[in-house]
Length: 296
Image (cartoon, rainbow, N blue to C red; front, side, top):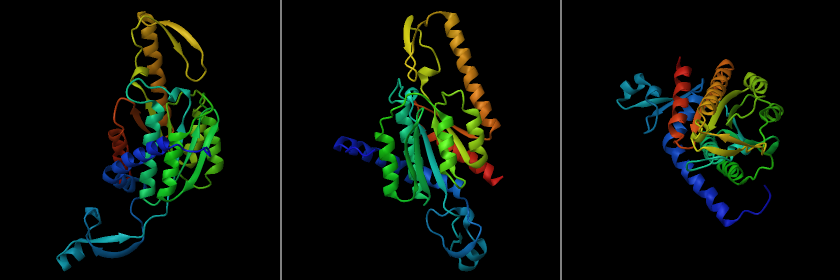
């Protein structure tokens, strides 16, 4: 990532930062804090209520005495480390609606990075294909978050395949303390089960599955030639043949069910996002599910 950055590239970085910062400031920052940070265990002081304070932090005894809302303040929990493991393989460079899967991956990673920095946490990123493409070690601060966003947006990967195992091996050696690992991928990798199991045993892993609507159904366009974006192999398929279409649907359903069962078995939360839909609702649902579990 040492090459000169053009003014157009800088403009793209700035636009992405502005777009994601707005979402973080208005939507995600509080949700992130509630789920991952929680309330510190050590009481610090009571102070006057300020707009934006959580109602559940109000000290009702002091409020009744002073006739004005007061809240309990706790010493913040220790800083967290958030690692964004972004799959940038060939299958991610696919999209049939308004953006490629890799673009959706980058924007969602930017939102998570900004949320972490807003909550004074460390954030880093590992970009991988069938090799480790680029690593930004976890650090704090807005300037560092901008570097993460810039590198995610501008990296041109060398590899085309997917090796989740290799990415996990790198993370296991790199992360010496428990971290929150967001693994953003379409999970087109048959050898992912054992690496994911090992990663989930040591870290809080969240799988962000990225899909395009065209991957969910075979288009009926007659005889067509398809190219595998990772291997480069091509195959001719009669997409109008009912047996071919039924076989494709069955294989896709089996693959998706196997992935869902795997993640549930490993107690890994899933955020499913699509290139033709907003990622805001899936991300909010994830935060709210986590919050409900935490309260229980």
